[in-house]
Image (tube, rainbow, N blue to C red; front, side, top):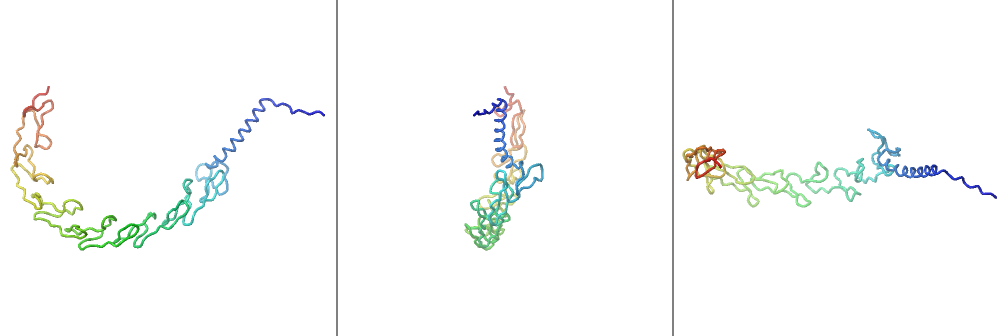
Length: 267
């Protein structure tokens, strides 16, 4: 009995056959990648994109390989349609637990849920202590503030907080209340300077004017004069010099330098 041998294939035919096999493998690997991007054949639970080409999974489904599989959305949650993260978020008033559950946010008595829905704050007249809201005890001559930190109250005008009470501010003669939350509670009237806990009248020397600066004697010298031993002395301006911006000091002109009270040409 004769055995018929299979005719030998041409080397080019063998090469084409091998290339076809490799192309088939590449195509099988490429299809899921295209599907994940919404560019392959549209699976169930999907719809065409509203712009451009391709498709997207329906709300509540997420692309897995070449399919759109249903999300496991817990109670009190809704699907977001986003491809990253869990794919869902908790309803307002609920918080995510371990990316599995949505538990109610515990709101203590005398508190309410913030508009964001993620946390809570105490009602007016209460302040937070740990996870509770306790009533604010108002001392006499005080009123509630919207500041959630601190005591939750501030004293009326003319009073200051001392050891949980509001005591009158001792304002000396020729002074006024500053209404400042921090720093000095009172300041001297114009024409007076603070000395210890009183306001003394400012004695203006000749060629001076009142200066409201918080430091110094309460006055400054006019332009062309300089302070000296409580007086304003005329500046003896040397040649080739000019008064500076304040008008109470001088400097040498450009190209000149100071030497023993005079301005000489620089070298």
